[in-house]
Length: 266
Ligand SMILES: Nc1ncnc2c1ncn2[C@@H]1O[C@H](COP(=O)(O)OP(=O)(O)O)[C@@H](O)[C@H]1O
Ligand SMILES: Cc1ncsc1CCOP(=O)(O)O
Ligand SMILES: [Mg+2]
Image (cartoon, rainbow, N blue to C red; front, top):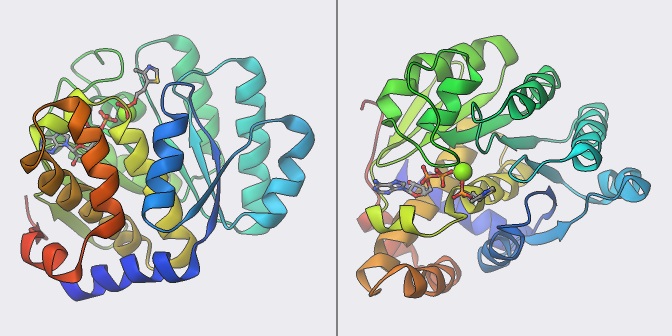
C-alpha cells in the first residue's frame, strides 16, 4: 500500500490538476502554496459570475466554510451543484462545525449535495453528524479521532462521502474500507491552516485518483509524513510552516515510504 500511495503522489505531480478553491480568508495563501508545492495548480475563485467557467476548466473543487458569509455560501451551493452535474469530485471542509447555527445550517445543506469527501477534525466530524457530546472549541478539536468514528461512519452511510477525521491519527472512512495514518507532529496544531491545507491536498488527489479512500489516504499520508519531517527541522510554528512547504515540494520516495505508518486498525 505504501508504494501505491507514493504512486498517487507522483500522479499529482505529473498531471498537475487545476483545483478550484472556495476557501477562507485565513488560509487562502497557505493552501494555494501547499497545492503548488505538491505539483497541483490552485485557483481561488468564489465570484458568482465565473463559477460556470471555473467548473468547466477545473478538475475538482474544494469548499471550505472557514469565514463564511451569505455571498460565499451562495457560491458554495452553486459550485457544489455544478460539480454534481459535471460528475467532478469535491471535498468539504466543515471548519468550525458546531460553533454556530449558521455554520450548521450551511453544512447541512452542503451535505445534501453529497460531497465526494469530507475532511475535518474530530470535533467537527462529530458536530456534523449531530453526534457530538463535546462542544466544538472554535476551529480546533477537543476530541480524539477515535471518538468521531461512529459519526464518520454515519456521514459516509448517509451521504456516500468518504470521511477523513484528522488528528494525532488520521482516519479515512470509506463505504468498504478504512485506513489509519499514524504520522504527523503535535506542533502542526500550532500553525493555522494545516487542516485546510490537508483538505486542499485531498482536492488535488481526488482529481486524479479514482479510488477515493486511497486518494484521501495518499493526501493525508503526504501531509503527515512531510509535517513530521518538517517539524524535526523546525524550532517553532513559524519555521514549521516554511519547512512544511519545502518538504511537500521535495519529499523523496524513500523518505515517504520509510516514514509512513499506515494500518487498517486504530
Ligand atoms: N496531535 C497530533 N499529532 C500529530 N499530527 C497531528 C496532530 N494533530 C493534528 N495533526 C496533523 O495536522 C494536520 C491538520 O490536522 P488537524 O489539526 O486535525 O486539522 P484542523 O486544523 O482542521 O483542526 C493533519 O495532517 C494531522 O495529521
Ligand atoms: C482560525 C480560523 N478561523 C476561521 S477559518 C480559520 C482557519 C482554520 O484553519 P485550520 O482548521 O486548518 O487550522
Ligand atoms: Mg480545520
